Amino acid sequence: MRSMLSKAPGRLEKFDRSLVRAVSRLPGGSHDEFFRQLSAAANNGKLWLGIAGIVAIFPGKFRRAALHGVIAQAVASGVTNLGFKRLLPRARPLPEHLPAFRFVDPQPTSSSMPSGHSASAVAFALGAGLVRPALGAALAPVAAGVAYSRVHTGAHWPSDVLFGSAIGAGAALVTRKWWPVRPPFPETSRTAVKTSTLTEGQGLSIAVNTLGGSYAAETADALQKVFPKAHIKEIGQDEDVAAEIAAVATRPGTAALGVWGGDGTVGTAAGAAVEHSLPLLVLPGGTLNHFARDAGTPTLAAAVDAASRGEAARADIGHVTVERGLPGSPETLELSMLNTASIGLYPNLVRRRELLQPALGKPLAGVVAMFRTFAAGTPTTLIVDGVRHKLWILYIGRGHYYPRDHAPLVRPVLDDGVFDLRMITADESFARLRLLWSVLTGTVATSRITHLTEASRIRVEPGDTTMVVAVDGEVMPGVRAVEFSVKPGALTYYSPLPER
Picture 1 (cartoon, rainbow, N blue to C red):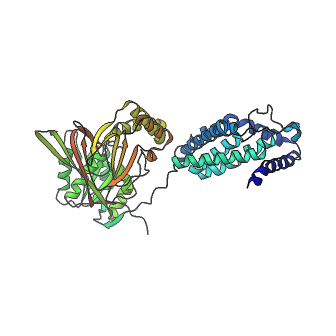
Picture 2: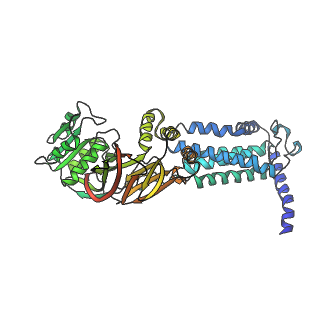
Picture 3: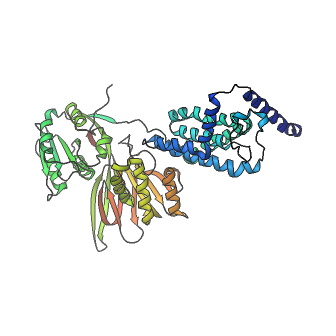
């Protein structure tokens, strides 16, 4: 073993010199200037930062891939320049090793081992490719060109380039470990049932909340055109929404309950539908229409199609018991929950994100909203199932939401029998810095401050006086305790089923 190690430097030098001689025998031409310009473009990572800036214009995975590539490049550059170059001093190739016209001018004076350009190139291309494989494949020839240019221009020996490339690959894989690539969302799955066929709206009674986000003066007329035989009730500003929906549900001849409004209105209608054993037709009439999207009726055409065919599915519904009022005169509210509930700073976060989204797009708006919310906000002390926590956010989804981070978007299954409980805690040291860093790097789901669990029953109490609870977008202050439970398969909702 000792003899092998003693011979290693000589073998490495022989390997390097043989490859450099092969490069030196290549005929001169325009490719010499090309590789010199390519090598110069990658100085200080400028080439990769420029590419990242262009890629980041496109939202979604492209933007995430650009950020992942830049972070991997930064790690590789730091390890190479601050670590290995100091530990492994090595002279660079001399003019006698290559034709003079090929040499980069000026030649770097730092250690030749390893190649920082190669490390950055491979780190960026592989880091971006782990998120967006097609982008990584497109960048691979550019990264290989930069790595080779360092030998072609006499800036490095071939082994420097190979070692630097290995460091870059390692940096990309390490960043993937603490910043995992977001897994694909599960396939949508619904428990299909047959229910009343609403031909032209026969037997359908629709409650329309005039305060819904997309309500207009012509809304009722538009609904009457697609459901000419339906009964439509517009709920005015001064009317009790819950009472009016209950009246619509109990109207003689009603075989199905329709609802047009926001998430809170839909949740109230779902409770009425369950109580009176009616199927629910959710019409996309609110600001966000979360349940309509998850139910497969994000458009009016999809809702009409499902209703005319009598196609429906089962969904669990959340039952929420809210304790309010003074200790001597308590008040108990019973609510239905279709989508989400939250305590802490989450409602402020959502409002900020919605305001910024038209200008910035959803992913970037989420990051900016998180920074603004948590930079100024303070954590809340809550007792969750008997355990005291200091929390930034307590988020409860009725069913598993994806992705598993701070911006849940999609719920593929509506009858999985559980709550999706997410807590972002402030119990740890440097909690605010940890939170902001995890937001910046997109690692909220894997951070130690994030706790992801599931449960079929949850009880939350304030740590001191009262708390503010939001259920399906409806905010309730002065809450002394809240308990969530699941009613499995309680709701039948219209949903267009896939063609077999």
